[in-house]
Image (spheres, rainbow, N blue to C red):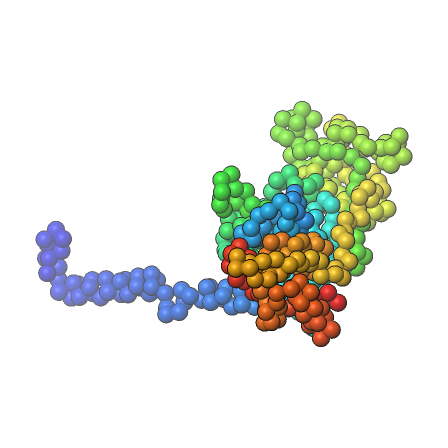
Length: 460
């Protein structure tokens, strides 16, 4: 046998060489080719996790008045019209078996009515328990009459850049859509509020995902999908989620008190930059540099804090930046005392101050009174063959029919599978459902020249 340079190798040595090469090749095969089923182990675990948590993810539907400026993008299946109510869609997640649901403030702000559709397809009217004015967080409540599946929160302080995350929501009305990605960055300041601490992810987030949960691989909620950055139409791979520890604080306060009772310090601060650090001879870039004090003639802070001070600790905990200081103050009860560690003119000191309440700390709560009327005005009409028909003359945005998607100009063909040709006839069948304790009525309409069955909620 010849080697590659043509020299002769002893037979026994050659056998040992061949055996060694065979063993090496076998080891390489074992290392490169995983055992059967091993490659799918992680995906199996994630699939099982998704199956477990998905029943707690919901769709949030809001009815908005005509021309509502703060409405999320409407359902693409609904025709746009300046004199029509619009149905906007978002996502949410059940945080308690009694029916408390988390979502974004911007999903429900300005809505006339709010509904929640659970994973089993049941639609419930929802109340807005509360929503703080300085955070994109809202708490809803539905009454299902039985315990509901709910999510578990994880510790967002333990989230690392590179961790895998899974988002579940209703982008464009496609319920329980699952996307995945990694954590791209932490503590992002996107200038949304004084408390910005967003988790950035590259998981695909689109319109309708707002208010939906962001899970870790253990099935714990570590954030709520809230904002996307898209300089061009479509998802650009940059999305932001409110961290779970902030969510737990807000929801815990709202569930117990009905309000946040957020604390604050009457000061304005800014980041310590490298150049400011050099100018002030500060130890490092940590802390919040005081720019002004809203002191009410010395009655609030008694002159204990001055512009130029750097607040470096709050009750013994490091203050990393102005947003960290704002979050720490917000979580402290109004009226409580806090010890601040200061750096001033080359010296460190500690002062005790009183935490004040945010001037608008009480959350803005929308009118949650349930609609008690159908809100449907019908009129007689004639079709192109001269036959009597029932047309929709107007839809009251505060009525129960508004949530069905029925619109002005629609033609009602049947109610509860009974043909109708007069307005009184259609209304009589609708009201009969209330007497029979039915929550909905099935109505066949001509909508945009197409026949469509819709369900209209019947008032109590």
